[in-house]
Length: 80
Picture 1 (cartoon, rainbow, N blue to C red):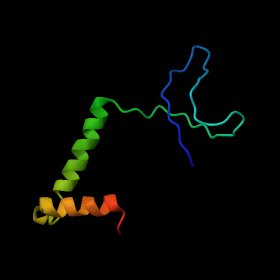
Picture 2: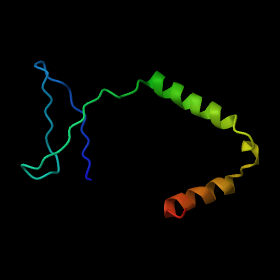
Picture 3: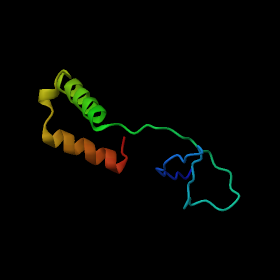
Picture 4: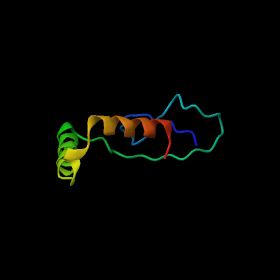
C-alpha cells in the first residue's frame, strides 16, 4: 500500500484540497483526516513519560552501549 501524507489547512467553506498525490487519475484512495499534531508541551510530556518508564525498568543499569548498538544493528538488518 502506497501512502501519501500532506498537511493542509481547512478552507473557509470546510473543504480540504490536496494536490500532488502520486496516484493515477481515477484511482480510488482512502482519505483519513485528523488533527493529530501535538504541541511542544504535549510532545515533551510524552517524552518525559517515556524516559521515566525506561529508567524505572528493572535491570536497565546492566544494559551497555554495546548491547544497545547490537540490538539496533539486528533491527536494521531485520534479523529476529
